[in-house]
Length: 243
Image (cartoon, rainbow, N blue to C red; front, side):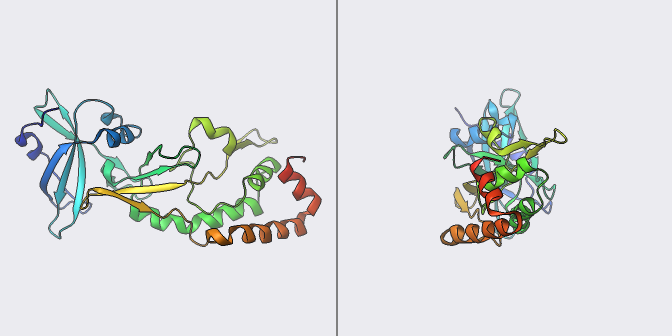
């Protein structure tokens, strides 16, 4: 696909998060594999000519903007989203990409910035523990015990479970009929590095969660405490699906 006239791209207003002007240093047709990933969260990228525009700020910072050509390539429009935590404007290239263990290499886009994600991860391990210590219903308690310890980032809004796996990560409260979402941890995360033009891997581990080598011992200690409180036979029965 031929490149658009330079004046079409140069007419775009490129600014950083502080609304400071940035200078375009290059542009190209967006790679097909990245376009497909973006299209899952940004329908504008699903078809047509999609561009990746690299810009530099006054402090030497880099940002990659995504634009779609319009009107027979005579104009271009920037594609923009919003961080679901801070509500700041995001380019698709700013967004976190994630995948689940059951679908390795199947990347999805979460409209959340890397900075916001770092503040978010500190509260999720404790939230998971509270779901086990104070379950809404027995169905939730049973399924969470069966799923085991969660040490990686999860969130049903930021990282929604694909339809094919939803049944494994939701239960129905028998008393109210309400559908309860269960933690479904991501396996991998990455974000685009505009300066280096490559992906940076992001650690998925939750703050406060045990290291990989300590997970089994931590989970045994935790379930032993649950057995002491609720009875060993009851907890073992829930895990085995007998209760």
